[in-house]
Amino acid sequence: MNKGNLPSNFSDIISKAGGSVERIISEVGIVEVSSSNDEFLTNIKKDTSIQSAGKELQAYLEADLDDHIEFTPGTPNGEKVTLDANANSYWDKQWDMQHLTHNGDSYNIDKGNHKTVVAVIDTGIDFSHPDLKANADLAGSKTFVPGTTDAWDKNGHGTHVAGSIAANGKIKGVGPELTVRAYRVFGATGGAEQSWITDAIVSAANDGVEVINMSIGGWRWMAHNLDEKGESASMVAISQSDSICN
Image (tube, rainbow, N blue to C red):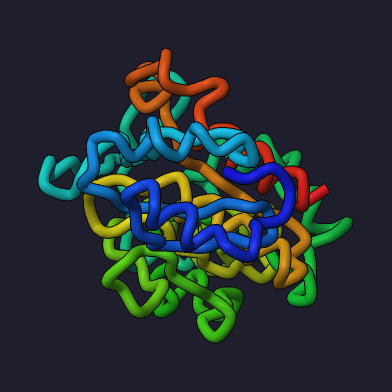
């Protein structure tokens, strides 16, 4: 990460240190670099214009699809419930949303509106989901995962999050008239590099979204290599990207 704007010769600086540029986030002076040179970090840190440099941290999903974990709806006390596919509504099972909306009273005040866009930085969204398709902005959605070309959800987590925000069908979200837009930073499995997340935050801010939601980084991720976080380059980058949203 560079102090302020990237210098015009940043590519040359990186190349001479033994690296190659993979991603540029000029708004916050961040460059993602790959290198096979063991001395790259030592070399690049010699440049006094570099605020922070380090091995990129990775946020990861709490569970992969390969774990074959199936979700069973339940109540706060652990009692399991069953869903009737033929039912017109699952509202009676949504104890969480009942509490959040004071049993639906908030809907009578404001259900949100389609002009208000919530960016969901996550695994993507299932834009065909019957409870979301009217509120999910496919055209404006983006992916930041290398090797992918769209923001469709291949995991399910992002769709779940988007549903909590703006579902409007059998399931109700907290704002059933809001627009949700996917900024995909996870694949079906595996992690998300911090530069992908930073890039998504900056892009959402540039797009003028009203709210950014990031339900990423569970306790296992926070506990993993904790000493590498804090003032690491990745955390500084996230902090710097957050500042442009204020």
